[in-house]
Image 1 (tube, helix red, strand yellow):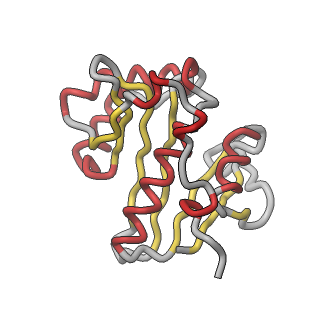
Image 2: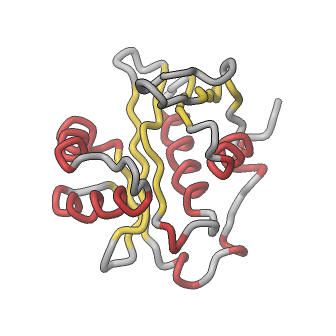
Length: 169
């Protein structure tokens, strides 16, 4: 049996600075929506979610959004949604603000998502990633995700190609 990602990468605490350790991971609350929008705009300046999309995600899937909070502002989030049959979960978005990238925060968010989904009995986690996003691809592969086929041309519309990656739980 292959070791779970948590066992292969038990902690990034030894690689983080004190600022990162003060970041609390918690569920999103309604008052976080402006900050959540800011994080998304900083993380994805060319195509951030519209505020209303984050609002609707909160209203529908609020228990499926985790944030990284330093007590004053947010620095990252993950949005993940399970299909109605409970079998598959899609990670819709993973974001860390540019100034804190490279410190294991995306990994920290993803490991928590995977822990929760295993506890719920979800069988598979899927996500999409831009083919040019080598950093994200490396992260997902290190967690055990693999490609499902090649590049899906126009997956999100013209010029919006994506890889689909999956991980069996």
